[in-house]
Length: 133
Length: 133
Length: 133
Length: 133
Image 1: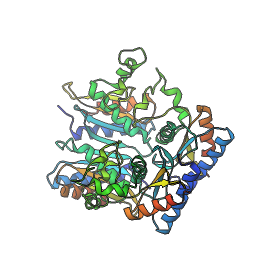
Image 2 (image 1 turned 45 degrees about the vertical axis):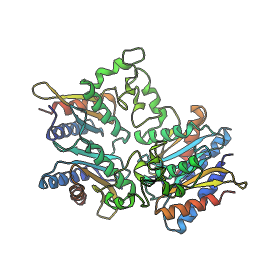
Image 3 (image 1 turned 120 degrees about the vertical axis):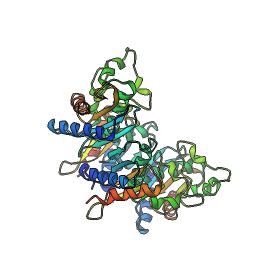
């Protein structure tokens, strides 16, 4: 089961709205369950460097079927997945990548958000993910 | 002068509509004048391999300030720009990348479309480009 | 708004002069607001390995609209942006990348300097940045 | 023997002057005999896609100690060096890369120019190369 473009666009609308509420400018990316790009927007004035980070957050979440925030503690020095970021032509393992489930609880894709603090990135990504029915 | 997200989204709406008219499924990408990603959509069922091609077509058009269709004859064996595709981590030099001008005639970005014949790709990209005011 | 070549050359002249004062040999790079290369020099005898670092510092500053010295504390183990360097085909997040503003306070580009201690790199980059009017 | 920064800057001044005469906007790159970057400028309004091409032309000329125009016939289909562009993370083998000799006739570096027709690129590169004493 893969997310549709209509679902991805709903996620992006919700994420943009949350970003506006937080007065931030975000890069927002949605990938399908196969980690392939479905939709992307960069809000006016958002960091260009976050174009790639938003995509890598979404892909990382889809590749490992978990939010990137769940990976963050595991990739620290001395921890089991230290330097896993060297795989897959580059992971991003800090918050802002969130899996997207369908109504049946299956993972159908992921959303990645980058452009502000990791807390705000995660909040905007979550707003996008929960907007998908 | 760079394209805004609202302008990029207008281009994508017009391109999606043209793709539907032609009964094709497309990857559609918009970049700004600096060749940085602004917006992207993959229509349901469109080729995954065209995710990258649509982006490279848009970037190629922005990088050289011309439609990719203008490059195609120049890159053939024996022609002046043979194998230019090895630059910039990969160009796409067949039709489907179209520059986007503002009302004053300045190039503010480019649109790249991939998913069908190059004729259809070019037609859909053009529909997107001309929708930007 | 993007930096002009004349402005970039003024930044490089000032940076070279500061490097000479500090008796160091530097690689100096200027990019525009879209993070595309505008000008570069490697002073005689400067580290070849810093050719790439100077460019990545300038790009990192432009991509995130902040000096690389502002990123350094955030990318440490346990900190929010740990291993962000895996994005964008490689960031450099230690000091030496400095944003360039125009007289109106807009970011029009960035300068990256590499070739000595990070303190000297940062000082030379700053000398270049403030020379742009 | 490697080109000095002063020599590279003299080449760039001469190349910029020739580009202005030809009413073109160029990316101009100088590398040393080891193919490492020494100096680079992008003239205002020059193609961003030529940032990389100018560098690859200069490097290709330095790597093989010959002008890129000498390689062009050899890389065509059926010819001995067909698809050599896949080496070295990408070569550019059409005209515009020119070796730089010192007064003793030794190769001390190369200049690469990109931004217009290959004829103009080559002419501007040659103007830069011969300005080095």
